[in-house]
Structures are given as C-alpha cells and as structure tokens.
Length: 148
Image (cartoon, rainbow, N blue to C red):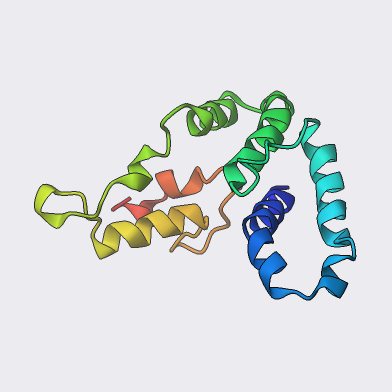
C-alpha cells in the first residue's frame, strides 16, 4: 500500500540528478512509471500531492495514505485487543524508542537475547512448534517461551 509513496519520494529526490545525467532526447519523453504511480497513490490517498518542497520526503506521501486508511482498519478490528494494538501503534511518539542511541553505559543497548526475542515476536515464531496466530498472542502464554 505504501510502495507508491516510496517510489514517488525516490523519483522526486533523484529528479535533479536525472536531469544532469540523461540526454535531452530521453528527458523529452514523459516518465509513465511516475505518472502511473501518482495515479495509484491518488486512488489510495484520496488527497492532493505533497508540495514541491516535500515531494522528496516519503513521509509526506505516506501520511495521506495512512490517514485515509486508518478509520476503515480500526472499524474492521474484531476484538478490543486488536483495536488497542492499532490505537497504541498509531499514537503519537509510539516509535520514539527506535531513535534511542544504543549506549551500553546507560542501559540503552539490547542484549543479543532481547533482540532474538523481539525478532521472534515480530515474525510470529515460537519454539514449541505450534502455529502462531496473526495477533501474536500465543507467544505471550506459551510455556516454552518463558523468557519473553
């Protein structure tokens, strides 16, 4: 769903370089891949394009798509747990921990085991061999995943 946003931000950020490298005969041709990506993005975002100053920033493209799809996704959430997860993930500053520098001296570096567990949760893996549902609740109650 966000692939057109990534492509359009990349195309906008490399536009000046393309202008300087490509010969005039190629530059005169219209870039149909950008036009088709903009059309797809417009259908997903239901909004106007970002300003020319922001077109090289993927977040400027993504925010319109995410805003347009947020309410339908919340509406389709089946349980209170699903709604709580979606609301928590979309709350302001929910991803701020990703910006913390990994400084061991002040306890901001994750151990190898903590990274392994976090990746296992993210990939819905379990050491017991039982299938893990899409919500990932199995790993929190499994006897073999006690360190989690």
